[in-house]
Image 1: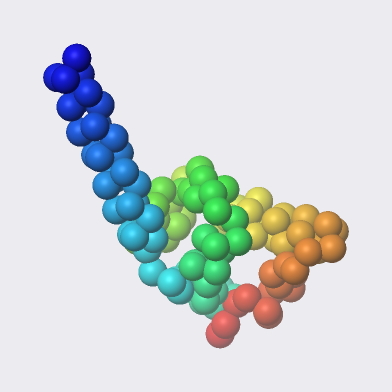
Image 2: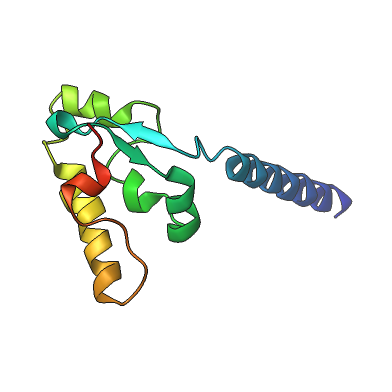
Length: 113
């Protein structure tokens, strides 16, 4: 019985430590995304994490790796404007429709030349 309890306590400690490590490594607070011919998109990563609480909202489309969007665009896995249209603009419009604070809805509000 004592052996089983020790295993459970150790397993719980490992899970908690892993969860803390994941929470601490949230990636950069701000990211500059290649926005194609319209220019760079400064992306407030931490602000989106705080608001969405679920990384898979975006990261089910692309992995949590530095430069992932650029890599996937280069190899043709992501089509032009796919992230913008299926994630960014769609979410911003839903938030606006719900009467909540929302992100930009026009090109020039995100893309910086």
